[in-house]
Image 1 (cartoon, rainbow, N blue to C red):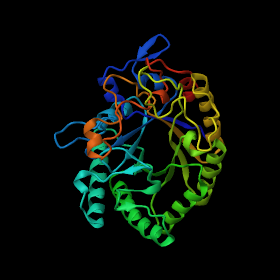
Image 2 (cartoon, rainbow, N blue to C red):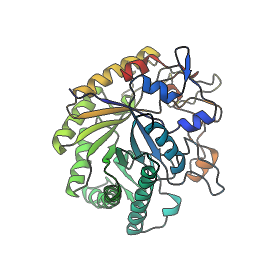
Image 3 (spheres, rainbow, N blue to C red):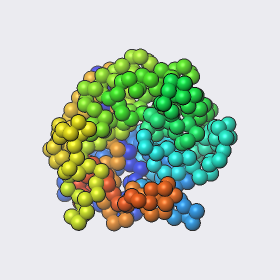
Length: 370
């Protein structure tokens, strides 16, 4: 059995530290990354956004993951012996199944112009990390691109088979521009990353189409959030099928689970997962929203990943994103620029960390890194 790489996405760590976050392993205070490393976390995943600032230079929040700060973070963690996965979003802000925004500088471009811009951005960004002594071992070309990327240029259209094929052709052209740039400047393994990792039909449709376009990649990356993506058994069956069908290694590049349903602010209820959460079928989740429930989820997730023949690792998403003063998934400037001003700010993720609200390592961390 291949030993799993146990990783963590730490993209918000510099911002959290600047806002005063403190971390503890028992009674011992230390840096979050040092605590994670001491418990067997050996790889870091870091996202990069193109231009996460408004026109006045005000930051977007969520780590404000521009290249310069992320290069510094990557160098710090590489120097501590961690391997490094670079996650290129190709957006000025968050990319996920519900949003894949085109960077401000690329809006109005033709497809060919956008491919050229994407290729240049990829090469320049990767070279910046290499020049700083933080060469990535893995590079994601896009983030959770199940529904395409750089909307609306390469948003997948599933209204008909013909529409899907035509929209995927645009997507493939952009992805191939990115992968070509990676191959030119780096020997990193290329990852293509989808979510909904329990839906085999959806994944077969996507990767069958990718095969028709001779898409160049090394690893299939998956998000697995059991509260939205199905059971462990469904995820395992799908990822086993992917590895065999396309002869690729697998990495679970995002996973997490709550340790509490109580908000860090007693006067607020804005959490992504709270006590009212139910699954799509109306049932309650398998594991309690408690430190013990989170630890049990980790044990079962690791056992499942180890049972997938070609699964190489798991990355916990933002285990150290504490609810510090000023911590937010999006500033008001960001919400205005992405057209989501109706939404609130704040840290909606803090109850899915591997540290509690006071920065104390949770039981799940000890399970995770062993």
